[in-house]
Structures are given as structure tokens and as C-alpha cells.
Length: 304
Length: 206
Image (cartoon, helix red, strand yellow):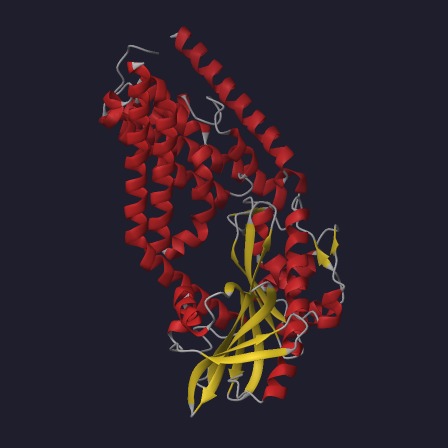
């Protein structure tokens, strides 16, 4: 009996010590970690649009984010869109509730600063004070509209889907006609050397330039990736001096109509990413069209 | 091998050659087979293991007198998991550039046999100093093994070393697939065993 007690106490204490250590490290690092993630997302967004250190973004470039929520109003399922709007020249947010079929229900003003809107908990408090008590809401996803002045240049869609092991988080960039501008893998835990290759240029760049109609029917083929295509995807052919930028573009053009070549030894991961991208693009285009119809009918001065 | 006290430098080289985790102790074969597809993977995983091994070894040897013998294995796992979490969070917060490369490798380590094994056979019987050197030796030995495997597999499979094109063509794509990992590990083990035989014969002859 005494033995068992000693074991129990010993194990409990070890667990507690471990918990305290991990907890305090988390408390110390949480802020810096979030900041790093924020910076990474910003860099990825600019990178997908082709801006970077060598090519700084123009000053008129701005991002407007739409946050989508799923609401449950006493058993009725509704969609809630948190829309950036212009009000007296200032940017603020408005919450619009629609039915799943896209019919307008109501529109509520939100008390939230544009800077604070990127923080989930801040949005939650703003929504809690705006919505009825009985309404249950949960965050679904966000879509970012990149604008240059008043023109939409791209849609950036943070998206998440199951990979081979756990969730894969990506950022998909579509142009105004929903063709793929680029794909960036943000976070994944696939196997190094196999599934982790999804983050390599030779895989993720295969999506680049696929038109929306082509994208909808995109498949994964288990064929070896042609060497010239691989070099073009990696942009390596450029460095050797033998191939010019035009030739790389021509090569990419040549394979534009092709399906996605699976990664050797990681067909499941390749398929998961391809399906995830197709899904994200399809759903977004459908939702955006429905949303724009309501916005036009309600004459909301949206900031995108 | 027991009873005899080893000096720190002996402990250090012990992990690299005589008791190399991959080729001699045959521990942590999953990563050895699965991840050693390129030299870079080998280095990153090796460095991650080195840190976790050293920290865990030191921690366990410092608290070994307070661990009840019947719960030592859970305690080892707990210690390793704690260090992995701490390193993971620290990297993510303060060295984001390194985290981008090493993030997925660090998270894998919790389940590595080599670390638990060294805690069980060495750290829980020895003071902190030797445990530290044993950890360093084992970590470097693991890195050495991974890099050696990665070199062979990357060169034969992709025709590159560290991502740079060396051969200009891909001799055998088969080598980057998991199955080839077993072949490479087996062949390397054979080389190590042969070296030992030769070494022992020479010593006898002297």
C-alpha cells in the first residue's frame, strides 16, 4: 500500500513539475510566437502577390478581410459575415447575417477597431455584445481581398484540410477570375522526405497559373515529374544561364493543362493538398458570388 | 564494458563509433530509415536529437535519486516530452528562421528509442558530468549516422548533395524510398561490423 502511494505521489509530482515548466515556457514564448506567426503570414501574403524585399509593395496596396461565422439562432442555422465597410471615410466592420441559401436576414454594426479585428478573441467580444444572448456562433474561416486602390488584384484564402498525418494549413492566392496565382504551405506535420515535400517549389508551384475551370477538374497523376518541368517549377533553370526567363515561362505554359504530378512516395499527401485547394477555390467562388448579390441588394459600402 | 570507468573523451567517442546508435545499437531505426533521404534532413534531425538527448540526460542524472524505480520509464518520457516542448516553443518564439527548418523534426523526437535507452542504461546510473558527455557523444553519433545515410541515399537517389547537383542525373530513384533505407542501414551495419573484426584481429596480432 505504502509502495503504491509513493508511486502515485511520485508520478503526480513529476507530472506537475513538467506541467509547470511547459506552462511557464508557453507563457513566456506565446507573445513572441504569435508575433512571428503574424509576420510570417504578412510576408507570405506579399510573397504570393509577387512582392518581397527586391520588389517592395506599392503604397496603395491594402488588404480587406472578411470573417465568416456560423450562427445558431434558436435552432436556425445562419451565416454571419463580418465585412469591412467604409463609414464616413473610416474603415470599420459591419456584421451581416444571411440564411444558408443566401437570403438577407439582418445587418448589425460592430464596435471593433480595424487593428484589433485580426485577433480572434477581440472579434468574439465585439460579436457577443452585438448579437442576441441566445445566439451561438463559431468562427468558420476568413478570406482576404488584396486591393490596389479600388481594384481587386487577388483573393488570399487561408485554408485548412486533413493531410496524411494532421491538418495542413495553406494560403491560396486566386486572381479576380479565380485562377490560381500561387499556393503556400503554412503549416504541416507530414513526414520529412515524403509528405513534407508538399512544401517544395516543385510541388506547390504546379498549381500556379491553373485557370478556375481547369482547377475544378484537376486530378493527381502518378507519373514521374518531367525534369524540364521540375527545373522550371523550381526556377533553377534560370540560374544556369542556359535557359532564359521566356523559356521557363514557355515550359510552364507547356505543362499548364496538365494535372498535378504526385510526389514519389506521398500520393496521399499530394491528393490531400490538391483536393484541399480545389475545395477552397470552389467554395470561395460560390460564396463570394452569393455574398456580392446580397451586398449589392443591401447597398452596403464595403471596403473591397 | 561495465564497471570500468570511462573518461569523458572515451564517452564522447563511444557514442560516435563504438556504440553508434544507428549502426551498433540499432536504435531509432524509424527515423534512420524514414528521414535519412537527404544530408540536410540528417543534419537537422541530428542536431535536434543532440539537444534533446543532452538536456534529458542531464535532467535525469540530476534527479535520479528521487525517481521511484517503478515509474522511471514514465518519468523519462515526461522529461523528454517536456524538453521537446520547451525547445519547440523557444525556437518558434525566438529563432523563427531555424524553426521553419527544424520545426517538424523537433516534434518527432518524443518517441525516439535512442533517448529513452540512454537515459535507462546510462544517465540514471551516472552523475551529471559523464551523462552530459554521453549525451553529446550519442547525439553526434546519431547525427553522423543520419548524415552518412543521407549522403548515400541523396547521392544515389537524387544525384545531389545538400541540394546541389553533383552527378547531373538520378542514378536510382529507389534510394529515396523507405525500402532503400533498410538496405542502406544494413549495408552500413555490415561495414561497421567488418571494421570491428579487422580492428580486433589487429589488436590480437599485436
